Image 1 (cartoon, rainbow, N blue to C red):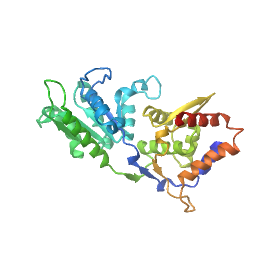
Image 2 (cartoon, rainbow, N blue to C red):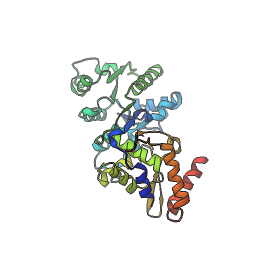
Image 3 (tube, rainbow, N blue to C red):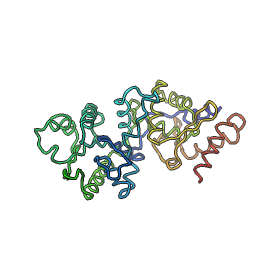
Image 4 (cartoon, rainbow, N blue to C red):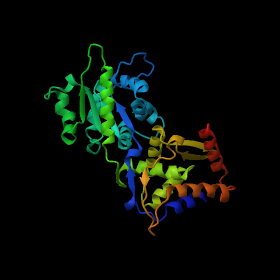
Length: 318
C-alpha cells in the first residue's frame, strides 16, 4: 500500500542530519487591536497596516496573518484555549508583530513576554510617546523583560494622535524595519525534535513530497523518525497549517487527503541529508517515484487518492 511506499521513501534517514530551512516561510503574525477590513478608513494601527500594505507593499501584505483569521479555533475543537493556539502560531512565524494600542494588546504583550523561547520573534510597534518614559508601567513591565533579551525588540515611531494614525512615510519605514528583521534571522539550523516549529516544518515537507497524503501516513513517517506525537497534537498542528494556508485538504468518502497549495509546491522546508548508506536524499526524484507508484502500480487500490491528485492538477492548471 501507499503508506508503506511512503515509509520506505524516508527509511534509513537520521533526524540528527536534518536541517530546517527557515527562510522558506516568512509569516508575520499580527496582534493588537481589532481590524475591520470593511472600514473605509481603518481606525486601528493594524487595520492601517493591512490597508497600506494591500496597495503599497504587496510582498509584505502576503506575509501577514491577522489574529482575526483564527476565530474558529474553539469551534473546531482542536484547541482548548487561545494561549496555546497563539503560541503555536508564533512558533512557526518569522515575526510576531504586536501593536500597543488597546487594553487587549497589553494583555497579549504580557502573554507573549512570558515565553522566553519567542523573544527573538517578538516585535512591538508603539507610538513613541507611549514608551518614551522609561519609568512607565509598560516599559518597566513586559517591554523591559523582552528588551533585556533582544535588542531592538521595541520599535517606536512618531504618531499623529490627533488623527489617530501613522503617516504614510512612517508605514513605509515600519515595513522596511520588519523585513530587515525577517531577513536577519538564521537561515538554516539543526532540526530539533522538541521544537514544535521545526515539527511543523517537517510535516510540511512530508506533505510536499508525499501528497496526497493522509494524517495516519504522516504519523507513520514521524514514527519512523522516532518522533512520537499524540494524535490530538498532530491534528492540532495540521489544523494550524491549514489555517495558515500552508496546506490544503480534500475529502473522498471517509478519507481526508492533504497537499500543498500550488504556489508552495516547490518550496523546501527540511533538508534530510543522506541515507544510512551515504546516498543523498533526492527530493525531486522521490516525489516523481511516489507519483509513478500511484499511477502505475497502485491504480486499482488508490482510486480515491488518484481522483484527488487529478483534481489537484486540474484546479492548479487553471
